[in-house]
Image 1 (cartoon, one colour):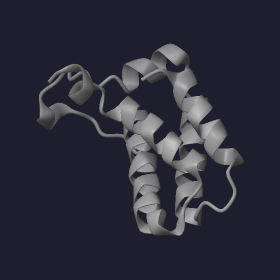
Image 2 (cartoon, helix red, strand yellow):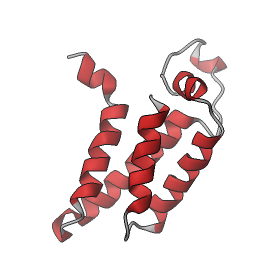
Image 3 (cartoon, rainbow, N blue to C red):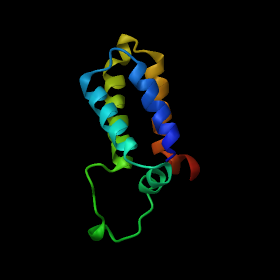
Length: 110
């Protein structure tokens, strides 16, 4: 994943009002994680490349790819629960942008 794209999405989300605390917590967590990675480190840590057998993979609580997915899942749940209430179209747009980052393999490989 490209760090600048994720940062832009985070920045846009932070400008929205009325997001639930759960979503805001995920935004702040991801923002904090982003600050600890250079562009190259972030891309390498979130590219999904497997270099070891599953039993040897180290899972860290600050895994950037996982943090992006966690934010996506929380935002998706919020959007799903509030779709009938006419949520801000910006929320849906940002959700789709996050989905595009996370579902790259489904998009690229039919």
